Image 1 (cartoon, rainbow, N blue to C red):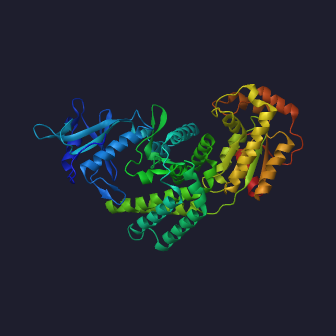
Image 2 (cartoon, rainbow, N blue to C red; image 1 turned 135 degrees about the vertical axis):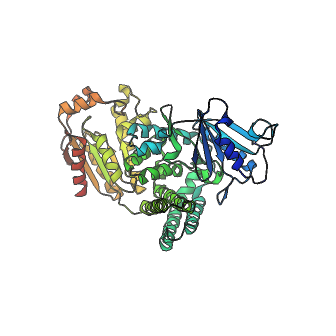
Image 3 (tube, rainbow, N blue to C red; image 1 turned 90 degrees about the horizontal axis):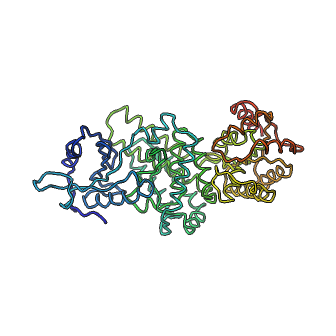
Length: 519
């Protein structure tokens, strides 16, 4: 039920003073810490966090009355329970008690409202994990899975999204850039960026509208960056979604994901951005939207550019203003760069099980094609998903018949062709033991009119055996017996570039980069 409250604008100073006092929360609370954003204040007391909406009115939100803030708090609680039910506990009403003092009340008229959350260590925020170098591939996979599961169940909103909505976002971005403090963005370059956004929307319009009709526009998170993700109970958890605007949060699910990918790229973590994108696409099959990703990523960077620049008006210290100006410009440059033309290519990496194909693919992918890099198609993952299994779930021997293998390779070729047509580079990661399999991959590139490079990895049998026995939580089901069978069969004539993969992964990747640079 929507909270009721006063409809006149309030002065929140007394409310803030009340929430800042330890005694307001009962016995055992000795201090209250405070976190601030431009629209909220969070008071940390004991095991809980109390989030207050600021009484502000901005172009994109209105929290100027207690009633509006109460409605926003109720929406925040409801929407965030979709992804973080253990974090979001309840709402608390603030009013005056029988003695006229400001207090938490049950039935008195509401002066304000707070969302009550379970408190967590700020070091568990993903932006802190990124800053401290504590993110890893396993966490990225769990995060991508979490987002994919959330998007699968989010409410469809066919009355939002599509080309018209993206065009409006582009125009609003340019308008907000014009309102930024003088000198942050060059007007001519901002106009050029808007023209490029408009051209992209016009070109992608049929795809954007088709995805809307297909149910790909949903009530998403809307503010999906690293500061709104935490590690809670050992799992990545999305919180603090955009609650105040149905229009801004009812978006294409890939546009929702793009905020996270852009944030990772901005922080220099393109390897993780590439990994999250590929894991998400593997789990959702949303490859049909790949052509729109450069636009989605660019718009997200543009939003961060103008938001950061707008915040300069609240900063007086020269050093802080200089740092924020530099960051706003970095986001602006990123918005330009995401739209930069980068030629697509197809790279196939073959070799026996344990030769290091997937390790090499992960190293090369962020560097190929439009950012955040190549679509990686791994035969082991394609097989699992084709048969309804999770990537790391072991399959029975019956899943490895010749007929199923042919279906897997057919799927690899079809997915590669689609991604190349969308302008993406592709890496195919498959044993490709038969010459005809390798030839068929080259034919995909020829048909798409893009360069093809085949890399064949070789290592000593002992080395590959050791790697297989050391695997944990991996998509490959290959055993040492499977490797032995591959070695007995042999690959036949190889016309791909042979690379020694018996040493460390960095040496192998360096050799592969040299080949790609010369082809």
